[in-house]
Image 1 (cartoon, rainbow, N blue to C red):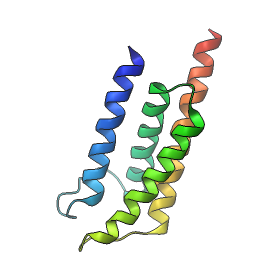
Image 2 (image 1 turned 45 degrees about the horizontal axis):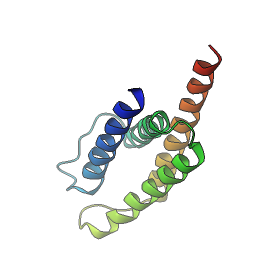
Image 3 (image 1 turned 90 degrees about the horizontal axis):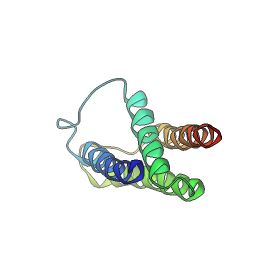
Image 4 (image 1 turned 30 degrees about the horizontal axis):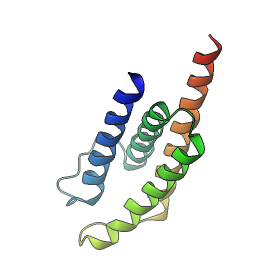
Amino acid sequence: MIQKVSLVLAWLAVAVIGFATLSSIGLRPHLASPHREHFAAFALVGVLFSLAYPRRPVVILGLVVIGALSLELLQMLTPDRHARIVDAAFKVAGGFAGVVAAQVLLLVARRR
């Protein structure tokens, strides 16, 4: 059950991130500093996909990194957005942290 709910929430999070990343700057939600938002959003995606596919951490990490870099590059197609290496780095770091955190949680849960 947790895997199915995590999978739905993960794809929902990807959709929200995609909208926030590629929409007009005026439509983008502002919750915290941009770097914290990038890190937190991709950490959440990393956790959710790791919970959905607990035995595939390397695949999940690869997809999160590719997704982060792809969304950053796709911003170059929008007139009022820009791709920045520092933004991509925070997204990748957040995704990595999320996958690692989920794997630690899963390991602790398995040992109990």
